[in-house]
Length: 155
Image (tube, rainbow, N blue to C red; front, side, top):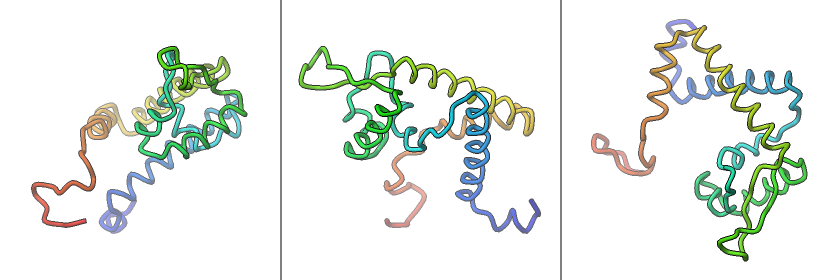
């Protein structure tokens, strides 16, 4: 990237470019492992699942989306065979979402490929840069609508 291009590229664009790089590599590596045509919307639900199960309303809250959006994605994931719905033993009126055996295989592949991509990025830009990036992204950024102590802007 030229100096002029760098000066005209805001942080949001740089983050988007980084996301696209990682997403392209992720999809290519998942396809090499035999995982094709996985809907992008699955990322709203799958990262929130764990072995004990999660209520759809809790997924929506954690993902910051509506329950309707989660139910729409769940329909697709049920059809693909990635998740199962089970009765919540604590409240028989509620359902819990859990990985199916196929979904658990997919989750393992996602974790493995994600590690591979982070290692590839470290080879390209260095361990220190990846560590700094991780630290910055893991930091608590706060509510985007909350007024900053140093800013007078109003939303």
